[in-house]
Length: 468
Image 1 (cartoon, rainbow, N blue to C red):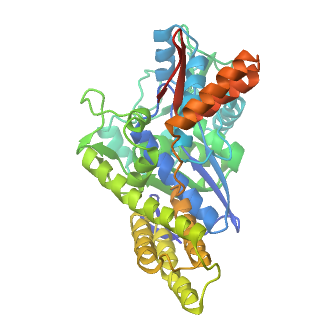
Image 2 (image 1 turned 135 degrees about the vertical axis):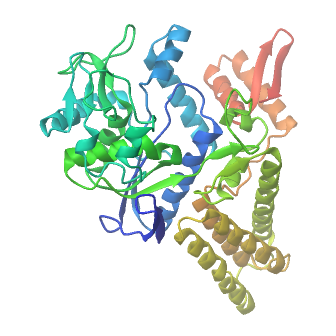
């Protein structure tokens, strides 16, 4: 399996630190609002990487954090007159709902930055002891960037060039030893959440959070660290500096980054009016379409989102779902159950599509080519399986298609939409339950309908319903 490593800027053979196991850390979102489709791309991409690793038999320890203390969270909390914790908890729950709707598997662990403060204090103390960090008069702790000799090895940036003009690493602070030093711990401001520390009442810098969470849940050395390419510098560069200075070991063996997402060939921004949350997309499309769209391009390529491309993705996904539905129908209604000799050959002939699929995924997780293999399998099934085919052949080909689509996170079984008559019958049953004071059953029916996207409204004229 070949993986493009941002660190070396080339494809490398994937060899895990421990045979049969993969330790993988993916930077998660800062939770101060509903996630947007830019957040969704790495979630889907690296979920697919994880799925393929599991498909190949690896045991994957997949850690993805939530940054639940941050300037944006605090700002939102002040605007709403609530605590920062209330904001972060609200949007963690909303994020998890969106992830479930996108068929993104829950991480092995979803650590929260605010629950790992002790580990951060410990790592910062170690960095100070080793001379890689220092505290100034107001209690701010900085990392000595120049002391870490390999600084810049991930982003391939030169420290002298950064000193000369790049502002993206510079952090204000008159008492810093060097303008390139970055913050590990900072004093609290009025009204902000804070924690006690040996240096001041304050909170951690962003970069230290991920270093500590990766170390706690995966160890000092990990196989894969992943995220969007916007995190390469300075976030991931700073993570490397902190972790390797503290632990004296290579932090991550492979660094994997997904490309940017543009909207109609422009960078997504609220000021441009081309900013879309996952919820907004869900109003127009099943989120399986969004996932299919995201995986239709190579993860390292920039991806352009547009209505036309989403329609194309919808049509492409529909072709696969219809073929799967047809196989299920043929399996259930077949006259003969066992495969004939000729059908056994047909079944064996489908091996080539699995081989192509795996070859694509082994080449730096090329989901675009992997999807092409699924389309070839769809065509093969549509051409070779019909009313006269055995149930065994239809069933085995369905399972094969389902296995490949599961790696991509594509669900083949369409949810049957409830008919109006079914809904009315359940509502009538709920009314009866309420009259009989069987409120548990009434609530259960409301929940069933809610899951199916049916919203009930109890009015003076009776119960009314609508589809969400």
